[in-house]
Length: 370
Image (cartoon, rainbow, N blue to C red; front, side, top):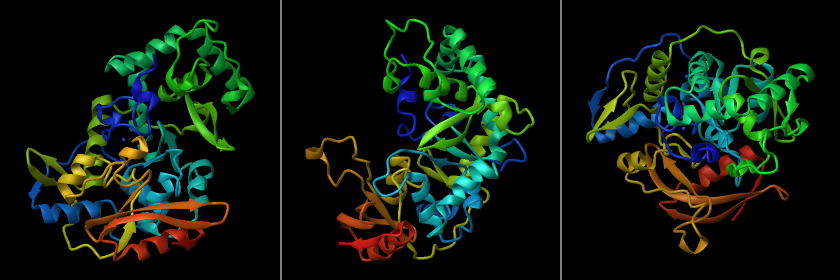
């Protein structure tokens, strides 16, 4: 069976496989491959300020690429009740921006790369390649072994996929035949079902043999990684993991360790401007729900998978950030047909909610309704 972490890769635990915690569940520009110390203890008030500044939710963000570089990555997900999470995360920081700029950075300038359901600055590619090598070798974790075992078990199918893409150029998954063995009696592999083309593409991508080079009608386009990725230096695995851990710490600003808040060396604890914005459920400021509760005293859960009768708030609810405080939550939905942003409900302190909704509607090109 495919590991559960792969079957739910974009909505699973808050930790990140690049930190060696949840392989197959992908939760920075890099010029040196070492960490910068263990952090300095700070008060809870300063920790909140530092976290908001570090995540560029203080109004200091200046552009799409610069923001992705500072955050380290953007999470991708098909959920689009309001807008895809990668767009909401940028809107929370930049306000209105050209969504086409993200595609331009990915497919034209190649300043970003897509890997494991995240968008990364191309400067992170040496670190990602270290993780790709780890998966090819299958020696570090149970999940890594699964990737290698699957590729080995379906070696002929793997060769067919790579040969077809090499010969024909970039392809969609549907352009490839399912030549995996055991087609009449094969195991069910999560959301990939029994047709293993999609899973093989995912495995080859994870191992660094294929790259995502575009999209057609929302479907990923695949090509050989060596034809898409630039040449990079080779970074040893331990150095790559240490660099990713350091970059994650810098992007989050603070971490909780044995009841103490520790701040990164680059921390900014100045008061945060009182700007109001709504956050994507996938925003890294709140992605770790336990950290969110400890830092902001704000209990938050995404209730998409909770039965309607048991939901406390709603299907898709966005936290409201004002300055360095999470003060409320709202349930907007974007009616694309009528270009209308509708509000299904709001809770908590909503005094500044209209500001945040107006900014969101302007970004979407929508009219506020309700």
